[in-house]
Every structure is written in structure tokens, then in C-alpha cells.
Image (tube, rainbow, N blue to C red):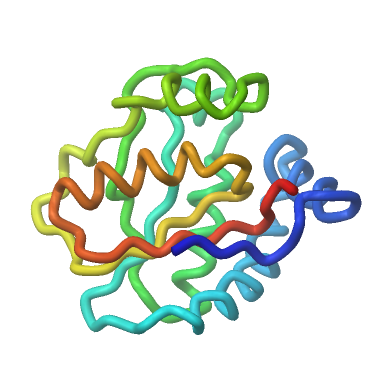
Length: 162
């Protein structure tokens, strides 16, 4: 199940891009309150953890942070839950925003792996990302988590492309 707070247009697009590209990390906390409201619609589970869509170490180093991780960690604070990096992205892939649906799916096939330090997986995960466009990214991440043994994956994003 995937839910988004806003449509990815106008002011919301500016907000997300400021968080993502203009080092306005402070935006993650107020946006996390909106994400927390969305999470109320999901069936709670005592073994639930919050995680995020990873980026390669190189990209994270270049940007200085992963906006999805900032959102997830702030969401965890708001919900008084644990945020855990369950996934990694070992290799770079082409930028998704330049690809169509089929190309996006092919581009991300096998791009995500379970984080090496993960020894026990929770029964339920809330997966956080900034924007839901075609669903290719969160689908691939969810697939990795489900294959590893997670029973239920809920996805929350700040915005959904229309």
C-alpha cells in the first residue's frame, strides 16, 4: 500500500526540491508530521520499523545527505518509533527522472540489497521516499524486503507525481 501527502506540483514541488537539492534539511521535520498522519491509516504492528529508500554512498557523499533518510528519521521521532537502514544501493544507476516506466523498472532491477548489518527483519516496515512517480523505486525496494521475510511493507511519500 502506498500513500502520498500531496500532488507533486507547484509549491510542493518547490518544497521537495529545496529539501532535496538546496540543503534545506529543516523541511524534513514539518513534512514528517504530514507523513505521520498518513501512517495512521495503516494497521499498526508491534514489530514495525521505519526505513527509507537508499542512495549510493557516492551520491550521498556528493549531496551530503539522503532526503528520504531525513524524512524517515524525523517520521520515527514524531511516531516514537525506530528508524533503521534496512536497504543499501551498492551501484549507481541512471537518473530515474529521465526514463519512462519500463526503463525505470529495468534500470532499478537488482539495484537494492539488504543492508549487510541487518540480522533480523521486522514483520512490518514503513518505507519512506520523497516522491512517488511510477512506483518503480518503491516496488523494487519492497520486493527486496518481502523476499527477505518482511510480511507487510507500507510506503509513504511526501508527493505523488500526477
